[in-house]
Length: 519
Image (cartoon, rainbow, N blue to C red; front, top):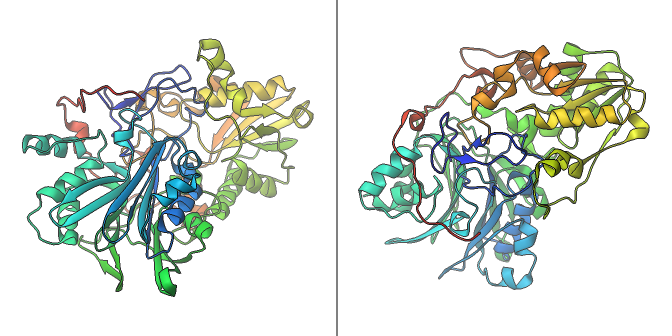
């Protein structure tokens, strides 16, 4: 749920490559400690959300959108639909295709309105009761919610709600929304939602479905993304889609309308789309890591194509830290656009010197120390014909703890590379994120403990360089970073946290559940 500098029950996810556990920090909830995750040294987003209003096959459209958003969460997935009389739900562990490829499942989700969720787990266990969308019956009818992000006062709120008699069924911070709505004294669903939103603190986007409307919300600073699209709906009338990224609109044939604004509530019903802005306007702080890594390359974020942004970051990286070399090699897949930009700017050929195996999935092999050390080779293989005898520049999106980078560098050297230089398309990650990105505790971040030269020695590279924070901002169309009013949330690089984190000063017991369940 929340990243925290101390160990607490339900607040840490086990690392699967042998280092210390990660601090969890997302409303997404739990993790499997026994999975051999070769990407455990990467940063992860926590989930993707989608909502569909007035579509003939709303559940099928929602499932297709979730396929496009699969990169935002692979632990679990769920859909809740509404047929005008009853709500229907199907949730499961694993990928979208594992849960929604059966026509009988889609048939069990009737109705022209639905919401869906993909979950990347960071806190608690990966068990069915933590899988979203969450649903509850209220006096006003049914209500389902799917949440992306992190509430930084969830523990404080949860403890207060439990004292009032609220019974929590999950260990996710997302359930706080349900209980705040339940105890609200306002009469309408929207007013109750506004009441709940004014009590939470954090970075979030959410979609919610009631008997009467589909609702979408972004946090007041707009840290987490949410977009609105239009599709041909039931009987030829207008249909609407809310989603985390524009790539979800593309797969369902929807037309992009606009980004949901920071602090905005979009209410969609058969009369159309209504906008409510209950918060005092604040400077926007969109998460800069969406451009660097999280979003799919074919998405457009806040008006900027992600693919173009990543190539421009690579261009800046080459300008700032060029080095004589024979070949530019991306660490696939996230390093590819930046490496293309680096190659174009430097004039050094771009080659696929590392090949990614896209069909690894989860391994059944017992994760012994020996297998952990080989784990990176399950996912990446060196292209020896490209690397042997060459001076190689490896381009990747980030270095977190350095475990994966060290193995990648070693693999490239074993393939015969004469020199290996590492270039990173983000500034050094020196601080933990409390806003919905799964990062280790700060003491586990390589850049928080070592200088760049020391980091290069740690990963075994001949040289190491990161794009500067100013270069990152330039690549995204800004003149530079204004320290008094940064355009993005870049706290993981600067330590400049734009949203309060009450839970970090809360030393109370955080035991979230005493129930142990089969997975």
